[in-house]
View 1 (cartoon, one colour):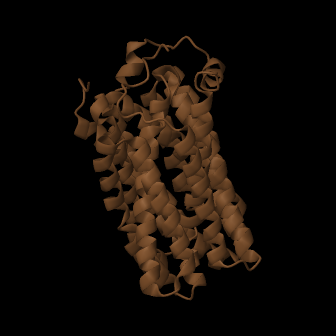
View 2: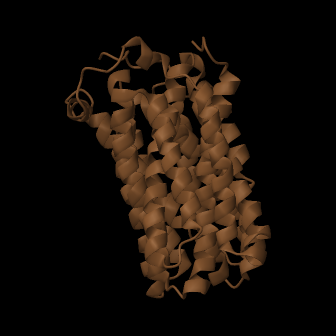
View 3: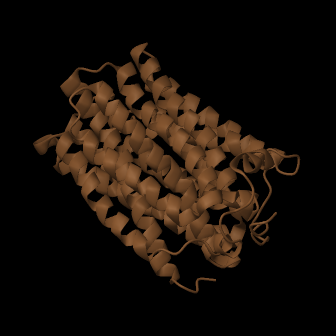
Length: 404
């Protein structure tokens, strides 16, 4: 299907953006702890930093998702990257929390729009028997970004400060923007001509039509559960380590070790997804995530924290890869980016609430055990809806062309 670009080049061009997206989110999780010291933030204000980012991601996922179905995946993909690059660079110079939050909102819009649009683009650009594996491999760039964030945080923040770390995250994103010149649009979109005749609101209504309502409901609940638990847990990991008695530098080092487990999680999911199916992989990895989250909340020793944290990284990020492969396959091409973007946008509401809830509970003296148990239960709810309402999409072709 890739007539103008090789699969490896497609993966490199789109994956680069995911790497820098993850680098920014990963850096943010470390910066929150440093900002708390510099700006004397309490736990609730720390929670707002992650939540404002998710507010932007929710708006970006919806806005850029629906626009990608009307104006093309590539064009919107480049615009989202521009949002991210400008916001990330400017946030390094913020002097107050309010200004920093404004830039985080802009960054979030770029991140939130880019991820569903990129996964849709890759999904539509490869042969059906490879699309699941390719999207999970695309998601594996997220692990590389988190690893880079952990390395930068460990070596840069303690010595040069959080501003230097943010400047580093903005510089390579400019190179990624340059690379987008060689990226063709989705073959599915190009076949329909331009512009697509259906309006944005017709596409939105189609996502909730009788034909797609059940799968949309399932997908929204699943996205909410996954994003709520992920941002509630992972944005707080370095801070949780500090709360458990480890120094700031120790916590950065331990989170770096935990992050290493993300790559094998992605690669395992990528290997299994074309063999056992999307639904099975997603369910199995979410169960592993729930169990690991419960374990992480219970243990106190450094060794067990690292082991449970590595298991959490392995299963949670593998589940993310399967979720991005599974979501676009729920809809025909005419509403594929809209449906995926809307599900991601609703999920980002969970990303708003997760860090806020964690910060609020920490401020009230609730134990880490209790907090991580809540996230474990939220994942269990998502698993239940997936098992009951989810359909396996592996044996099928993409659900239709641009005209449903």
